[in-house]
Length: 124
Image (cartoon, rainbow, N blue to C red):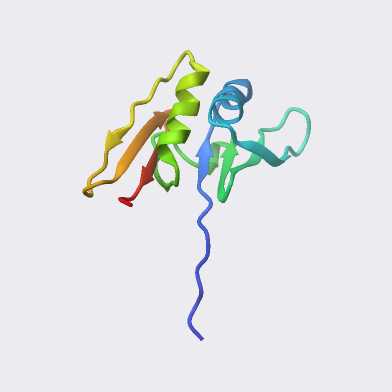
């Protein structure tokens, strides 16, 4: 029997939990599903989600390097862009741009830790 693959869950390195909360939870609108620390002074490992998209955020040194680029298939991108623009986030005001395929659109955001999230909508 051949393997059957499902979702991919990227692990993004973070360095400052309040900054991560401000960006991912307050600005992008993700919610925290769960989080784990071995003790009160240990690094955070957290799962966040927004609809069907799940990300893991980690303060653990070995869990990744900054500079990751994610392409995220998105529906209703113009509406999401408008909602983010209305928040007037101090550090990011992304544009809505044409994507590589005719009729597609993209919105690129940079997190405070050097990771790039590219929200993409295919042509209708």
